Length: 278
Image (cartoon, rainbow, N blue to C red; front, side, top):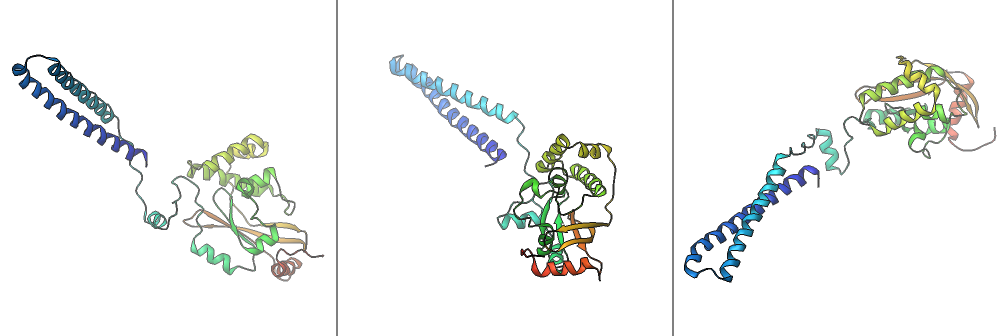
């Protein structure tokens, strides 16, 4: 039961109690006024009058509580459900909160992941937290399924637990910090995002410097060197794509055709995460 429902239920209960006690008190008072001249003032009549007076006092007390509660502004009604939220509610799911980072993967992105099986592809939200990745990404960068919470965030990994598979890229960090600042403006109610930013600012001087610089750094294609423990070194092109209307980021690694990296990536797509001697 939400706060608004409790408020109106209590208001109805107080109003009903005040009405009942008013009727009882009024009836007893009228009966006492009529019977007392004929019966004389005795113990029974005094008790009758005391009961009538008590009923009137109780009625006044309940009406006072009713007036005090009615003077308080009722809680605001919940926001109206959007068409998509109604479908989620019918399915027994909770709709994402307003002002929080969305993590819903659209059918088009699912289709992209399924069809680009020969390309390492991962999907991130606006705060650069990993949502999902295809099997080739897991084979190239390591299985992400065991990571939880902040461990799935690229900025947290970059500043606190950098991967030994990818050479650090200062320009990528700058663009991601700019993205994080923009996300904090768009999603002020997201608790995970606020805590992540506070933790990064408190523990990393580099992040704090980039955050306070306030620079707007666009994402650009870059060349990355991946040190894979099984297939060796791969030089791959890294591209960041945005999904209109969903605020997702798609990161894809591709190899130039005819290169050793292309052959090694093809080999990795076959063997996956199997362990074997190089």
